Amino acid sequence: MDKPEKPIISVSGVRGEIGVSLDVSVITQFAMAFGTFVGGRTVVIGRDSRTSSPTVRHAVLAGLFATGCHVIDVGLCPTPTILLTAKMLHAHGSITITASHNPVEWNGIEFAAASGNLLTQAERDELMRIYETEAFTLAPWNEQGTLEIYEAAATHHLDQILSSSWFEPDTVREANLKVVIDAGNGAGSVISPSLLRELGCRIVELNCVADGHFRRPAEPIPEALGELCETVRASGADIGFAHDGDADRLVVVTEQGIPLSGEWTLAFVVDFMLSKTKGDIVATVSTSRMLDDIAVNHDVRLHRTKVGVGWVVEKMREVGAVIGGEGTGGVIYPNVHYTTDGIASLAALTQYLAESGGTVTQLVENIPHYEMCRKKLEIPSQEVAMRLVESALQLYQETCDAESEPSLELTDGIKRVWHDRWVNIRKSGTEPVIRVFGEAPTIEDAEQLCDEVLETLTKLMKHISS
Image 1 (cartoon, rainbow, N blue to C red):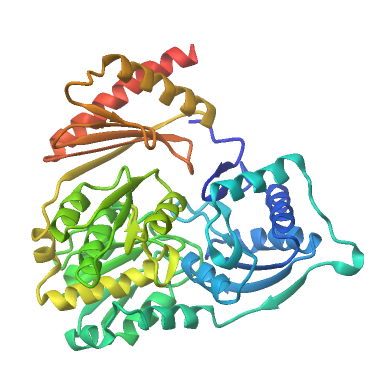
Image 2 (tube, helix red, strand yellow):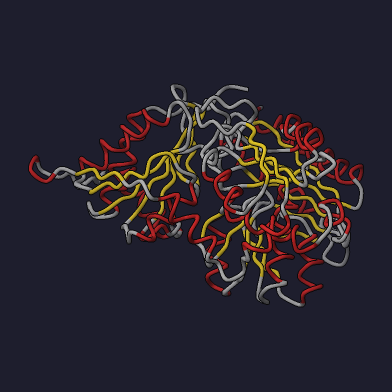
């Protein structure tokens, strides 16, 4: 596959491979657009541990200073920590320097509006208008921006979690859990071990040096967690945890050393949270149907949205949901802040396990579950991806019978739904790929759903290319 020549712009922000599709001039242009967007006022910035993040930071500072912003730099911090700090300091916006779960050679910037709130669609449109038209409001020589260093961001984040109404730290302390934490050499390398120690856990640290040299893939999928699984088994730990690069996600490894997908993180936390307070749930169209069963069990309503944290947050605010998230391991805790928070998930999951009095394996057995298959088709550009999805939709609409299965749901991409399974086709917003997710009672059925779709997409792409 040819490398993308342009950065990928999405609801998450701007990402690309450093020196290939993303360079400092693009970063500075976007920072000037953002500085103009916030009116040259206060902006909080922070970064993950990637070796390119200091370079990106300087490019961001140049753009913000040029538009007269007062910049508060919180340093190397998880994304949720940065956004929560922007909320606490009443900043007019924030920029997080991260490529989250993307490979180590990637980097990017993510934008938030006033008080660390994710951008709405209208705000994203306005920011892009400023960027594309270069309608920058540049400050004169005597009104250039200023820099302030803020070092208490992590402390504030931990205090906010520990004081949450749903959290009982003493319950976790009494359980005396043994925990292995794998931060992936990312932004959670310091804060997560600190929280676990505060909770009285006996911890084993793995990849908790934030040097930006990722010793496993940044995305904590089961295939990447072999070392964590072995460490959990060898140390006799009760549970293992793994973050992505910016620690807004968390995934679990059982006491038997079996890695669980991020779907289980959200399922566990939703089940835990609904035992504390009743209310609506929000998740994306491609999140496991385990949530449907949990919602029925707790007699609450589940809402589905497009894929992307911003869409989930908007719906959560609209319906007053008590919990929400994505099947990636990203969970949103409204009482902490409206963003995915892998640090808060450490607290929720350790308490969930402590209160159960059992093992992670037993927690898995208590929830009806399905098998999910995730595959992707690499494509040369976002434009081709868009045309491919449109062609697939036309094909499926022509063969769809309104009186029988499968039905079509078009909340995000194309979702074909049967009574006991589904498959979703959507263009990625962060990588040059088409994602195909399928879920069914068995892994064989789920893989068959995905393979049939990939075969169809491959045939369609040949027609598009020709």
